[in-house]
Length: 536
Image (cartoon, rainbow, N blue to C red; front, side):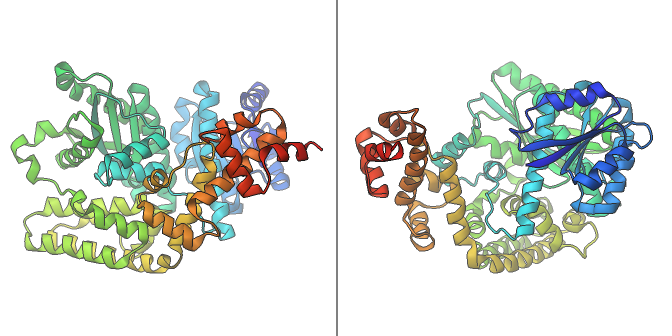
């Protein structure tokens, strides 16, 4: 269990927060409460809480000073903070974002849902940190990010793969229309700070964008890097009037979000809006067009639309479609194949070296590969940042390349670093795939699991997955699934609540007879004998 400390000078607020959620269900225990920062500091020294929820304004010592002292004393080893604040104190809250403060929450708008979401974000960071410290090499693929990167760049191998992955992620793509917004968060003041100081500000800004966007209309959000993001707005009704009015509607939404960002974090927002498309498969077109529209953004026009700034007849000549190289790039990232990676990047670089006038397309190519790398690699942001640790602006130096020649040079350097990384990881990546597939099977043990469907979820061929299991697991794919299902069945049978045929149905077996056959093969006895033996 992780420890939680609640700090607020109002007793009713303490009680309210303490009773707002079932902390045990979240894996937390409230180790104490305090009326001010000074008392809280003593509890932190004694109890070492993992999370602190604190008001920003308190007597004796306020929440901001408490967070600052903990950061100076303990650094990353200290507790994570959630700051409770009011609208008028957001200018103060911004400073706290440099002290391992992961979230701001407005006290007047505090709900169980918003508090639980903030807690879950911290728990995710704690788990990642613990895995890193323990040297754990098994990682769960970032399915959500990977799915949307594939969607935006048209990287799915088939419609079946798209449907299976969207179903597994519980994503709805039955809308009548979609519009992509490509955006950038701008803060000249933050850009002057070290990366570790920038991250909290931009992370919180991106979180606010996501939370506000879905309040206006159905929307999916993806962070490309700490400065750039994509929103996919989903329209439930598509008709002629909607095509005419959607620019006005999207403009209004982005203006509301921009005002909130400016008021809370003193950052500005630049956005390019793509075309309205009818199908999920065409979202990649809207995304490409949103990036083209983004190039027309200016200080006087911070939201631009593709239809308003790019002549339709020239649209097909203005974008670089990375899907042309999707098979090679997908294989390179999935298998950490440095040879395929370098060959693909060399082809792209040679293409643009031949056409030095196509600067816009070259920038698209480099950015797309950059974003693909950040999203496809575990901890991609930090890995890519390390590639450019000695370069002003880090990997964002890509935006300072002023010619095709410079962009090609940047991309070749990036490819060389990526290639070295692939070579270092290639030795054990196959085993990682098997471990992640095994975790996926355990998480979905009650469902029907076929080799084709699981392979599609992970973006690899069924034959390849079968070969990996044969080499890196003690049992084959189908046998492993049966073992997992039988183990889960034994727990249900031991409870005595379900009959054998009910357990068979719950575990996704086609019949009780087949369930008994599999059970006996794995356990050596029938389910009936197991139940009788368990109750003796």
